[in-house]
Image (cartoon, rainbow, N blue to C red; front, side, top):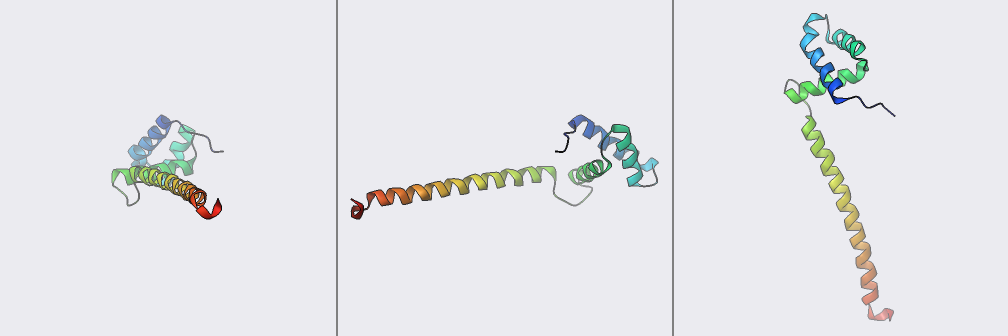
Length: 103
């Protein structure tokens, strides 16, 4: 199970990369240096930086808010499908109870 990184550490690491990447020959070098300094995985930091750029509008992609909304809607959709299945089963049960041929 992946370890949970504190939000403050994550934000600080992303901010450091964004502020200091001009000092490094490449984005990858900046990410690797900050990842070592902050004690986080370089690949995780790379994804966080990309998501931050998307959220800031500097890169194309799905923002964090859009992702959260889609996740919420999928959960709501799943719940509604379960509710419909329960209602269908109840309807079938009660329709059978009310059928005069079953008495």
